[in-house]
Length: 451
Image (cartoon, rainbow, N blue to C red; front, side, top):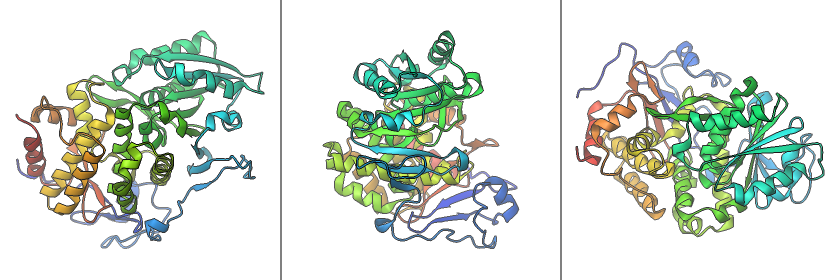
């Protein structure tokens, strides 16, 4: 298959390592500033350089010494220091829709953290059959202790990606309507990524929008899906095709919930942690290479660092590009291939992070075939995913045609063109582009599929 040409070559967004900032480029010709403003509306707050030579826009100190843009110690809404037990806070800066991410041990035992974000007197906790016996009572107590005017309802959904659909979502609406919740009610997502996505979508749609809070209990949700306001459900033809961008009031990450997380789920979350190092934070990637065994052994300080650094990275990206017009799409490294795997073998057969890990290997393979990265980067990616005990290839039942069929309806397709996140340049650099040799994609698919 020959490289597709277009009268107006697709925009390419290039991400330089976190200590270098962000650069934009296109191949060729360069995009003039007016078009760039149309395609990346969140970036013009920074002056744009001449169109012929987009360089680094936001120089920073080396990542090892970097203080995050939106990170602080705990405080009350007025900014006063609260108590010695206040957790670290990462802020997602979205103007009047900004919100804090609280990270620490024992946060469910600090009821003021939740209560300050509850609107009205009615709360609906959305959870699943696995998490409810472990944490529902504790969360209910945290919402109501010293606050007798608040009433808490709950809806317990079946556990698993295969239930992330319209039928299950209707159970949330049924409960909300049966208990006569109103627009001042607050939904609370208590669980992993599936629960967070469905609860957030329900909150966005119920009465055209009620407040909600994220309490993620899996590493995957803590480092990725609970932050940034992506909500939704799956469709038989593709993952997360139905949903909305809808931000929570806060994200409360009690790292103690990881004590009950199965090893396989922990490894699944590490796939998203690795992603941040590959696309924008090379110092973080080097830290992961040195500390992977500590993460797998659930060392509290290692996990806390990985969660906080991941949230800092995602908060920075979301603050610049909330609705994925360009920059935020780079957070989907490996996801286009990974979502095809999840759909192709049936939702729930592989965990999301397992599919993303295999998808990341495929994206890196394609980047290498294009000549955009050297052998060393490819080898390091394989090594770190193997350290994490994650898959480095799709299941054998996946075919080239199955990949292509599912990828054709991926959310990043624009005007019939499949755009991908690929690594390019030194570690920590990537591009979001549709301008690549189609032969490289075909070669990658054939290399990983038997037919």
